[in-house]
Length: 415
Ligand code: PMP
Image (cartoon, rainbow, N blue to C red; front, side):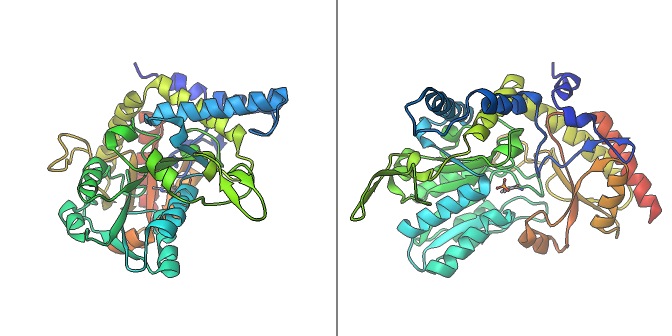
């Protein structure tokens, strides 16, 4: 049994009041709240096991290094990678994508070569490629979608040419909630010998992910969106790719030997981890992953899917409600029954400006996101400026959805 009330006890911030109302936190797509277990593990490390890693022979340094490598192993297990060497700690999804864009383009791409992204990408999976386009003359191509926010796989196939060197798409859209058929996207790319990077920022916190089952070449996510701390994220890369790519940043830790004449690089993953890593945040991330693992990712996915379905059904009854993205029961023709929507609901009501409604909902204690959600090209595609976005986490409840829906009705009446 999924015991949401008991889960809520682990998150002290959920007891907060905002403008005299109990906080309803529906901005989990931006960042999630942290359970005590995560915060306490980090505090404990600072109090008892703080030391720089991979550097000292002294006791504390050995303990801190062991903890970091254990955290790496926890991440490996969580995303089902083959080896912990394939887990690079970064600052988050953004840095992970920048790493691949920089290292991959430097070595594997020439002017005129192409990278394919989708029209629903976050800016962090658009701008790094555009910068490479400016620097190296690579070309960025875009997979289109239906008005319901489902990627057009036939169009994707047509975009692939002999110059296509990499595909980079989001597993789950942070605006539409669409769960993209990434296994299919990867399979098609591999038929052409093209590697694929998956932005898992919005998938890893909400569903079981196996990088091996997907056969992803690169996969990344952010710790803070999966109930872990800020300042830590992950880049998974298949060993053969990580071995092959050049370093991203340089300095301490990432070297083998250094002389003024010649420097060699460390083995993976350390080759990509220049400088002191955020080892305390890695401890927090590992704790967060253990926390969600204990509840069960499949249980979290089922609970959130039902909550999302419930919210959409209630919201759809509100006059002039416009919900973006696929409906929960809509299925891709070739999806073999896989639901196409995660726990993100972007919406607009009539002509009410998203900022106005977001501000008034806040007065009722309800935290939703407003704006373009770092996906301006997607807003252009939808012909809008921005939306309100409710995004659920494992601790949200049906009662909260009821208050939220009543809040939207109340605010709508004011206009
Ligand atoms: N990709 C997606 C799909 C996201 O939702 C986000 C965060 N909103 C990012 C990338 C960037 O994540 P971060 O800011 O943690 O690097």
